[in-house]
Picture 1 (cartoon, rainbow, N blue to C red):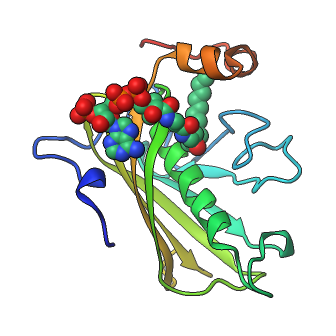
Picture 2: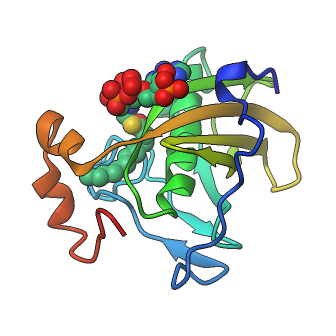
Length: 184
Ligand SMILES: CCCCCCCCCCCC(=O)SCCNC(=O)CCNC(=O)[C@H](O)C(C)(C)COP(=O)(O)OP(=O)(O)OC[C@H]1O[C@@H](n2cnc3c(N)ncnc32)[C@H](O)[C@@H]1OP(=O)(O)O
């Protein structure tokens, strides 16, 4: 991965431990918001990603590239693939049960991805330092050990709930997550 210093964890930034009481290994993760473009089941034009975690810190998901995701004829649009990376990375930081947003997303496109491909996505956190979380993701063609088509590195920034209340609709989120702890 060609990764900038901005998405490289500084010395001493430790990867997160699985949260006590977090999802059991292999258990599916629900959407963080039902209308999310990446993971929302009520978003008919979205990617409809569903994810699970094998270990409480890594997230895996499958993305079936459809005709609606084309850029060049028969090939996935690069922006759509970046969205899938952003989403699976967001799902992995979501395991920390604190609100983060994408600050920076870097993407390497290594192979063209044909319509009809199942991309096997995986994301993990390489370190947390203060409000900053450093994360990586990859998308492999056809199988979890298939050829890598896309790699991404990201910097996510922790925000308070006021971020969503001020700029968006925090009530819509909290209506779906009664158990969400804003400051656990
Ligand atoms: C309801 C719950 C739902 C929770 C649901 C979760 C949804 C996840 C969905 C998937 C993810 C998305 O698409 S999220 C949507 C896309 N992203 C966004 O809309 C974010 C828009 N940007 C912002 O709102 C803002 O710029 C923030 C929050 C990222 C940062 O603003 P801030 O809070 O004022 O903090 P600021 O001081 O600027 O930055 C803090 C530190 O981070 C660094 N930093 C900030 N941005 C960057 C950057 N792009 N590249 C490098 N470094 C950066 C700063 O240098 C600083 O470092 P230092 O000086 O401390 O060293």
